[in-house]
Image 1: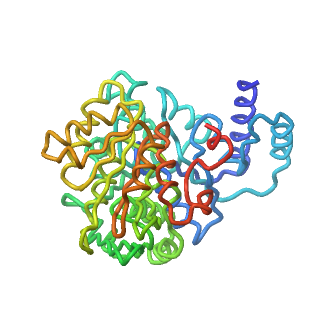
Image 2 (image 1 turned 60 degrees about the vertical axis):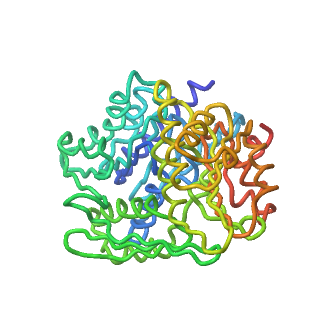
Length: 421
């Protein structure tokens, strides 16, 4: 049944695109795809009829569903039949589609491009997540670059110049290429500033594009990741003839981190949680630790705590990447809660770098991490919680959430399917 559903979804999605000719904007990368996708949808939504998926629809099932604006019926066969019937009678369609293309295995990006060839492609950053499914890191990078290869010569590609692997792609594509970043001669992200007042967080930045500067003021956003997402969105907006000031205003008013994406949340006992539990790759984990480093102890005795679960599917890079995380933890955290067997290598490295063994808490899993945090977190603590999906570190966040009754609204994987696992 699954192959039949996939073929029908692909046929219907391609049919809608051929019929309505929307502008297709696609985002890929190992880090920041969803944040960038959401930022682009907001920026373009200030001027156009835009469709994007509310969920993480970026695979063989998800991309067609995102194109059609549908939710998956799951195992409900009649639900699928009704979905297919609805799509045959669609008469109105958005002018712009903002899609996310994931890559778990070789060929995934091309498969998505075969459904919806992008007019605009964005590559955020590349990290060895899912590297176990590729022969080497170069093969993974080539997979991501396939998105830009599919953009036509009159299209537009946006690259993160601060990611060395992505920046090296700039001469590969036939389309117009624009970059964003905060380092180098062509830096257009300036003056990132994070202000923390109690449990409120505000990130400010200035973005310069073609001589015009706009100011971002992003409440409840933290550090570089949301700013980079918005910078990419502003480049796409300008390409689509949306005034930069109008796009920036929309971002300032509406952009917010999705659940599990470095989202500041009120914790128990007057603590602040940096909930980054949606997933984890080496680059995103280091970025989250960099965000933790932005906080200073403004009250006597407050601490920076890194509660980390494994980074999955790294293959041959796993040991080295977990060790690199341990080194960064030793530089920015007062306490390291290392959850799971893979993260013990990071704990060993943190101690080797000088972190006291009494400050390195080794636990079996996310549940034990949550119990430790619940017992030991105190007023003023800043607690970063992060791990790959399979680490289920949202369980640890939930244990120290100031408003646990809002967990379904605030946290990832709160559906019945996940709660039973």
